[in-house]
Length: 344
Image (cartoon, rainbow, N blue to C red; front, top):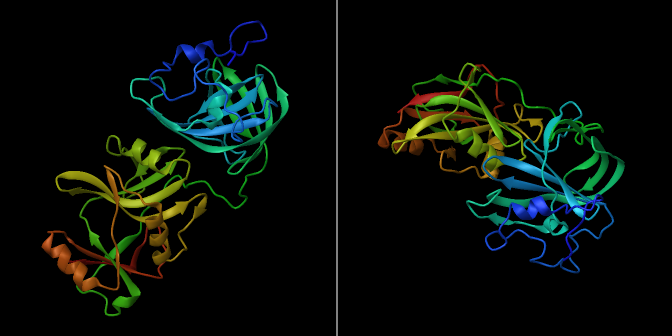
């Protein structure tokens, strides 16, 4: 493959090649692999291909790449492309990439530049409205993101990316700044109509809400005040959810001598609040997320079997059981009889 030349005669991929060892990285390196034929994921040389790759490097980010003059002009976007014109996101200009990179997915080995897992988050075509050294206006047509965007340079390699169209989902709402958790009323006995309730273990930990967005996480405590989370929890949990914004409710509990974030409610997902959604359905959506990692777990719940849960809590030395009415909404900051703490 002939290296692409800059308009001034220079090699536009020299920096890219200089950062990579073709004997160690699975990434395409010019001169080592020819451009495959017939791959629909690869550009055809029409300056109309875009790709967004999710990059689980030292810090999770998304790489936006636009085909231009024989290379993929690239920006690293730490929080992903903005879904609303109300927010601008940082976009850091990186080295030009070869066209083959539009189809690259794989694990960049530890010790290599950009080490970590790379996957294609979205791809499609784009139209150019303006292209200069300081401003790029485009219309993108992808399966996950579409619309008009502008990238504008602020200083050095730092740019900003702005969505020019209305939100892709006009009903989407940002995560709240703060939310005080719902609290259970303490009762001596389990509810009689147990078929109408779900039961969880009371972990005896510290209440913590997690606001996850753009691969980052912030936390509030039982009073809705901003607090620091345990080291490593925020970044790893953010990477687990990727581009999906979510508000989680749970608590930090010590399990087997290790502090673990036990997640037991989902209050906001993909731009939509779930406070009015019944507890049964919120738990179903939470379970569907499959959140399980070295520092966090989705807490188990058991519909209609409070006695067995209480016995298990007693055997494990846990404080008790939480009974939650299956059709109950989430009432921020309220103590409600729809949630009941029953000591073991």
